[in-house]
Image (tube, rainbow, N blue to C red):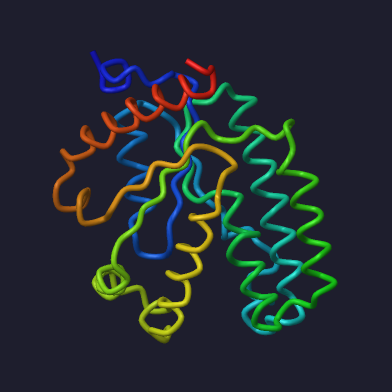
Length: 224
């Protein structure tokens, strides 16, 4: 018996992984996909026609970038459900509006008109009964100093050049966002409880928690 069957996780489940930079979303995505024999869905950045332009001029290209991300994530979400589920998804469509677009608006790199247009578009596409929301969003969290230490440890050049204040702000924005999030059930996991890089076997503990959580939330939805 595999782990998916052992813990009664539906074969058509769709689980999305969310969290700020450095918490281990990609590691969690791959580990859960392998454990459950699910497919993975990762963000495609290589084909993004706005990314380079955006880094050259935030104010000019932030709206274009966010609309592009929204369209691509929407198409991917549809593809996952049309395929029949059985996916682990790295990063959610909800973070774009709740964190990144809002950050551009707050910092003045997206105009109020563009931000309002983007939010209206997002609501019309995503926040409707017709949009296929995930069965579960796993939010990976932890103390901000531990997350910054992880970012330093993995040594990506662009991240090393980023001021610490940015990571602090991003951590705060994610915490604010997840506390208000209600589009689908949320399971919160602390990075200090499950270190999949050092202890890959802890994936079974996570799968067990997912199984229990999905069972509880399905009972609540049915009113049992």
